[in-house]
Image (cartoon, rainbow, N blue to C red; front, side):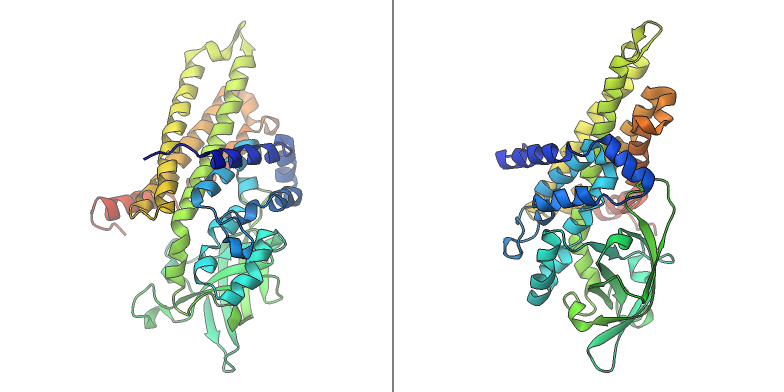
Length: 391
C-alpha cells in the first residue's frame, strides 16, 4: 500500500499552487469583507479545467478520482483562500456524483459540460430547518401534475451555499409522504432544476465567517419543475445522495488540512520575526511546542485523508470509515492549528489584517459542516464498533 503521490498528482498540486498564487490573502480579505463572490477566481479555476476534475471525459471532464480532487481543494485552501475559495467549487465536484451516476444521458449531455466550463453554477438544496441531519424528515414535497409533464414543489431549505450566484439547484424533495413510505428512506427524489425563479425566494443568512460565499434560506412556493429535471428514478433520491457522502467528507477533510497548513505557516513565520524582550518569540517553548504539536497532528491527519481517498477510489468497503475519520481528524487538527496561530500572534491575531482570524473562523466551520463531529463519532460507534444506536 503506497500513499505517496504519483508524478501526475504532484503535477496537479504544483499547477494549482501556481494558479492560486495570483489570489493572495489581501484578495480574499477584500472579498470576505465586501461579501463579494470571487468570480475572477472561479473563472480562473474553470478556464484551467479544474471544475471537471471528476466529470467523465465524455462530458468534457478529466475523469480523475477523489484523490486528485482532494489535492486540488487542499491546495486552494492552503493558498489562503480557505473556505471562501474552496466553497466556490467543492459542491460542483462531489455534488455532481448523483447526476454523473444516475442522471439520464440527456441530462448529463445538457448540463455537465456547462458545469465543467464554468458557465453554470449549481447549489445544493438538501437541509431543512426542522429536519437538520435527519434527512428523511424533510417536508419539501414535489407532486406530479395531472399532465405528467411537471412537478409542483413547495417547501423550505436552509444553509444553501451560493444560491444567490447559482443557476441550478440540486433539490431533494419528498415525492411520497413520510407516513406513507414503506421505509423512511423511500419516497425521496432529486431534481436538478432552475433556482432563479419567481417561485423561489432566497434570503441570505448573516453568519460568522466565509462571507464571500453566501448562505441562504430558500422559500419554495408552487415551483414548476419539468419531469426532465428528475435525477434518475422517482423515490430513489436518498440512495443517490449516499453516492456523494464519502467524497464530501474526504474533500472537506482536505480543505481543513489546507487551512491548518496555511495557519501554521503564518504562525511559524510570525514566531521567527516577532521580537519581544530582545528575542524572537519562537525561541520560547510556550510558542514553539504547540506549533510543533500542530505540525505532527496535521501530518497524522493527512495520512488518514490519503488512506480515505485511496480506499474510495479503489472501491474498498471500508472507505466510509476512513472518509469519516479523515473529516473528523483533519477538522480537529486544522481548527487547532488556526487557534494556535491566533495565540502566536497575540493581540495581532485578532486583527483582520493578519488573516489568521479568518482562517480560524473558516476552519471552525468544518467541525460543524457538513456534519458535526458528534455524528462522526456516532457513525464509528454504531457501524464500526457495533455499539447500540444512540439516537
